[in-house]
Image 1 (cartoon, rainbow, N blue to C red):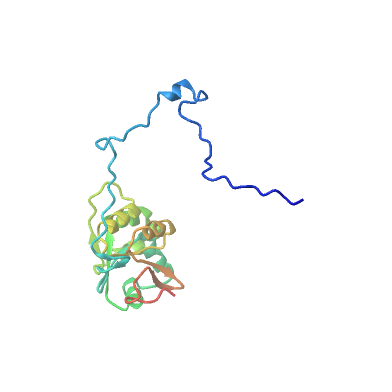
Image 2 (spheres, helix red, strand yellow):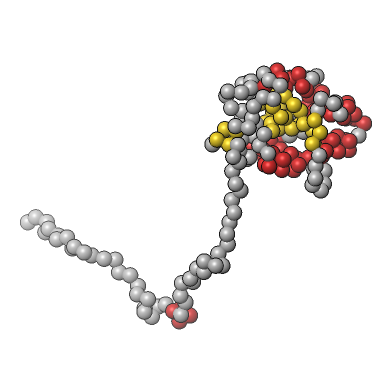
Length: 196
């Protein structure tokens, strides 16, 4: 004899425990789903995107370039024997205007006699000074705050932590010293020297 055929059972549903089941605890029976009050909900505000950005492309960047300089960028330029303004022009193939904030100047003054050459270079009249209106003299926070407000700057720094913070901000290129010359990252292909 052959195997007996099994008939399919149609509309078979998994058994679900009903709300009235005795296995539910008495205190859980009285609970109801909390209703969301639209007046009490937290409103999250997202930061507005800059009108200078076309997707990740920053339209405010163009010659003459405005370059915010960090303390260690000046020190690395001295160690690599690079003239700051001339090397910037060699990197960008255009005129560059270096800017130094009051926080960077204060940081250079705090470093003392070992960095007196960097301080003399920073006081060059070709460098534009930017006044700071905030409390404290921490240059990294000052630079990050300034580039979030105005996206027209390129940030020149060799500090790894600061570069990591700047990479999170969309549309801000970073200039640094590598292989005895300046390199630029996150710059549109139409402008400036390649990163290599």
